[in-house]
Each structure stands twice: as structure tokens, then as C-alpha cells.
Image 1 (cartoon, rainbow, N blue to C red):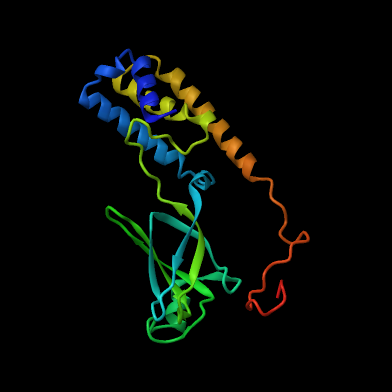
Image 2 (cartoon, rainbow, N blue to C red; image 1 turned 90 degrees about the horizontal axis):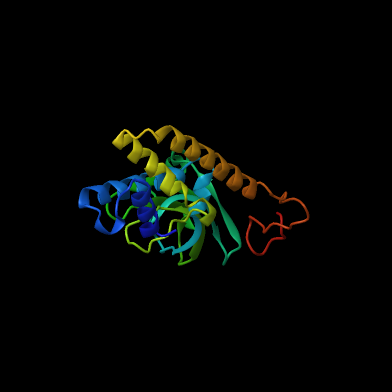
Length: 229
């Protein structure tokens, strides 16, 4: 469903004409839709709907990097050197590299989450350790920042079969706002659909294979060493 289709369905169920909604009602619908959208897309386990991959280049002598539109980094690796970067805590980093920009330059083997910068274009801030001594393109599996629905043609990232959650959730709020006696029935329908959605997504993600099951991992010591070392 597109945003316009969700809004139209909300209008129909609340006995309104979607083509003549006043600005206040339309704004209330949109806020409720995005509120439920953000909540669903950030529930534990369900945030994987926002998982994607991005790349960023290192700069010789630069330790700190800012990656835009990223809510969380899950892992980083260097394909050129066949090297997986391990996560390091900020406390460990400060102990081994108090002068991040000038000391310990080489090929990074760790990454450190420093924090996030807010604003109109939020960034995920991280250090690489060792401080890079060359330009290398790093690849990262990330959880992206969720983009709110705003244009009529916008489509949520939820699986198509569960787009109705973005209609049912706001409908609960609208019936509560109107003190409508249908509230209890819709609340029950919403809880049932949310439970089905959680089960569907967790079941989809559960079919994992052990990485040790005949898969040769790249060497963590560099491309010149045997796989698995």
C-alpha cells in the first residue's frame, strides 16, 4: 500500500472523504501512520527490515569517520586485504590509542563506535584502529535510518502482506480520539496482526546454518595467510 492508499482507507473507515480531508485531520493521520511505522520498524528483531550494505573510503592519517543515514553498524570488513574488522570499545581504544590521529598508523583491524550526530542529516561516528595509513574502501552491514513516509506514492518497507498494520494502528488512535465504540474490536485486530507479523519475520530469520559447517572463513591475519587462520 502507498501512503495515499493507507490514508484513503483510514478516511473511509472513519466516514470521511479522503479527497476533502481538512489539514488538521490529514496531519493527524500522517503523524499516526509514521508513529506506528517507526515503532514497528524498530522493535527488537524487526529492525532487520532496515538492514542494508554501504561502503566508505578511509583517508591516510584520519581516524574518525562519519557515515550518513546509518542508525547502527553491524559489521565492517576490508575486501582488498580480506580482513574482518573486530569491534572495540571506546575504553579499550582510549587505552591503546590516546593520540588517535597521529599514532599507531597502519592497516586497521578494529572499529570503534564513538556515537551519533543528530540534526537534519544524522551520522554514525566511528574510529578505525589502527589509524589508516592508506586509502581503502571499507564495506559495512548497517541498519539504515528509517525515512518517514511523506509523499503520496511512498511505500513502507514492511512486507506487503502486513501493510495493514499501518492502517490498523492509526485507526486505533483515531477511534480513541473520536471515543468510538469500535475501538476495542480494532485494538484486538491490531494486536493479532502485530503478533502474526513478529512470528512471520522471526521465522523467516531463524533458518541459519552454522558457519563452521564446511565453510572456509577468510584469514584474519591478511590475504597472505591460509583461510581460517
